[in-house]
Structures are given as structure tokens and as C-alpha cells.
Length: 230
Image (spheres, rainbow, N blue to C red):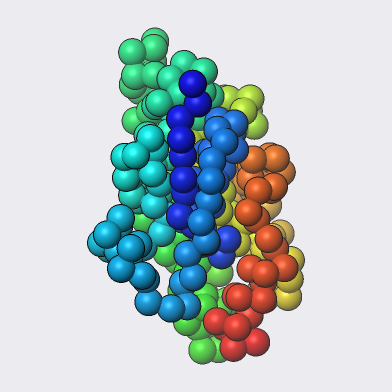
């Protein structure tokens, strides 16, 4: 019997998209409720998630919060049927889980924050310096971790939790130069200086569980332009 799943989400949120990718990849049916991020959270929502953030998942009556925790929970519940995350008791399963966790942590804590600084840049010179730092850090931190990507993390032929948890940020990094928000030189710099990362990122962004679903490029571009004052 399929579990009863409800996801509180917003299509503009990369954190919510992480969970959508996991749900779609696991082919789990679910109900969704859009949370308006432009107004204070309702008391009903705060009872579910006192932090007031999204996403929030209700799984057979149990409330689970925080996107990485939710996605990991869903993968674990699916067990051996999921390519997202190996079972820890499988041969090398625990090791691969550790490597996936380290990769995601490296991207989210070391690389992605650099890119997020772009929206606060006051000049073209400042922006150029941040972009160079982003490319250099991707080459230094991520390329070595993608040596065996084929095309996905750890030599997997299908996406893993490494892709599900980083794809929303990849989409935005490549979205900016493709929509006139940043110089297109960012794309050529990534291809030249971080080739393994670039190849892996492009394969990830093309995967149906990533490119379909709630991803709405037009709305996200409009939202980013508004935030950047463009």
C-alpha cells in the first residue's frame, strides 16, 4: 500500500525542489500545498513546522522537516529499490553514503555560498571576482570528487542523492548566464577549469527528475531579476 504523502512547498524554493526531485525519482505519488513565502506563515503551518521554513513533509501522519533530511528519509524508506542512496548494509553501501554526504556538504557549505554572494555585488568588478572564486572553488573542491562520475556521482548510471540535493543550485548557477544575468564567460570558464564538474552538472540538469516537475525557468528568472533589481 502506497504511503500517504503531503508536501508543503513553493516552486521558487531550491530547498523544496530537492524533495520534488527525490519524490519524482522514487515515483511516489503525493499531494502538494503551495506555501506563500511573501506573507507570514499561518498558525496552522507553524504548528507543523515551528521554524516556518519550507519544505515540510507529512508521511503517513508523521511530520518531517528540512530538505536533506526529508530526501534521505524517502530514499531510505524505498530501500534497495532506490538508486538515490545505497542501503548501508550493502557492500560498500556505508562508504558510498559517506561519500555522497561529503560531496553534498562540500557543495552546499564551500561552493554554493560563493555563488550566492553574486546577488549582493555592487559592481561588475566585484561580480567578476566572485565568479572567478566560484569557478576556482568548483575546480578545487568538486572536480576531484567527480573523477568516477559516469555520468552521475560514484559511477552511477542514474542520479543519486548527490544530484538530488545539489541540482536545484546547479540549475540556478547555469541559469544566470543563460538569461543575461551574468556573463556567459562563466560557462566557458567552468568547462575549461572544472571540466569534470561541468560535464557532471550538465548531465544532472538534463535528467527528467531534475528538469521536469516544479522547475519553472521563466518564473525563477523573473524572481531573480526582481531580487537583483534588474
